Image: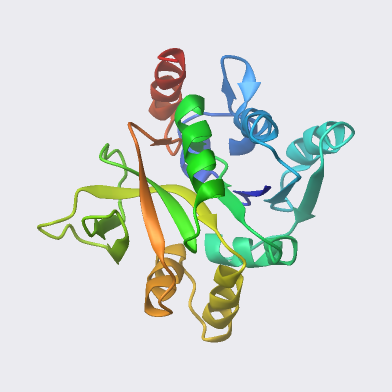
Length: 232
């Protein structure tokens, strides 16, 4: 399995709230969140882990260079305008077989992730997205599904029949990279628009429910994330 991590954001909200480290180095029980993700991926059959960080993160780059000595990391250092453009910057590593991509601040139960990856590896659909009923996001992306958990739409506002929101965990096939290429060429710039285009291109995507997924956007989210991890 190939994995990818988007860690090229500025983390400006955390910085404004007094968090000194770059977001990827934010510690949970003493372990930087990017190192935690790499460990989880390695325990779930990682053949490669491709990571993008921005050019203003020398400390993050130093950690990744150290970890690269023992893990199969591909490191891209580049400033991008959006998460979708960050994904595109990693796309050369994602063109063969299945891959799983997350943002660096996505926190979840590792046991749930193991079940998710197993389901993704065994699935013959074009992708499986991690979703949750837990809403702790300022701008959630709502997801509608049919009776078999196939995703029928991605929505900025909550439809009456929406039960889940996107958890920022994207398990996709190489066909999704072709959709991504067209999104870039047409001037689109948001991950949620890319996801909508996957549906428009008739890729079969299923939703995989997680109990709770937390994004670390604010300083208060660090404690929430540690509480989630401690539940395991």
